[in-house]
Amino acid sequence: MEIKVNTGILSANEQKAVENRKLFKENGVFAINLMGSPGAGKTTVLEKTIDYLSGKVRLAVIEGDIYTSKDARRIEKYGVPVEQINTGGACHLDAKMVSGALSKFDLTGLDLMVIENVGNLVCPVEFDLGEDQKIAVLSITEGDDKPMKYPLLFRESGAVILNKMDILDFTDVDLEGLRKDIHIINPDIKIFEVSARTGQGIDQWAEWLTDRVKDTVK
Image (cartoon, rainbow, N blue to C red; front, side, top):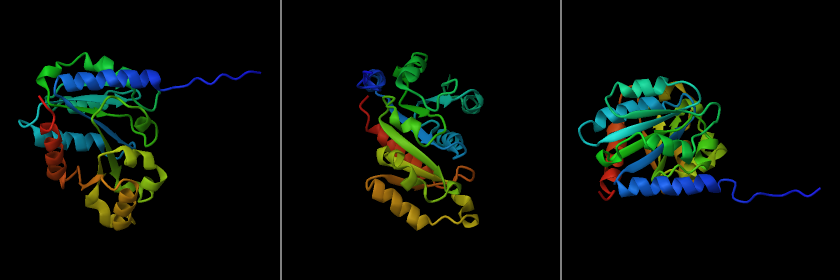
């Protein structure tokens, strides 16, 4: 029996990602792909970030989820444009899904597009969406072994947000070891220690993000 191997399984996604990236660049929009486990606090971090950037950066949000629109409704309360993508079971967003959502926005009036991906440490990072930067969100309650167990996410990300720092004392996390492992995987990654619940460290993360947005040519 002859077995045919189809090359470039992700080629269609890659082509659409190129188109998305070109669209962002033409409109001077900096785009980030926010990734992390379910319960890591991605949406709460995003809420606090939106609140901090209010009046400073014109942003919009694409929310990825398997079935519900709960996260989009949370973001909608902040008065920013938001579009929900339901994957219907898929564990990640792809560039075609994002392209469809982008058509709903007036990109000429934006500086920043935040794409919150489906909660998963594996699948989302393998699909280029056309973003400028991948951002990892890791809750310390997930344990300090996650970077070494799921290295691709941390290797591909420009920054990692260590969330729920306010409960560090109630965990067994080796914070120094966690930082060390992250930097072994990606020496250039920026680490932000935050608490989305209390707001700790959100200003440092948001200012770093603002600098990336300012570097985007309008």
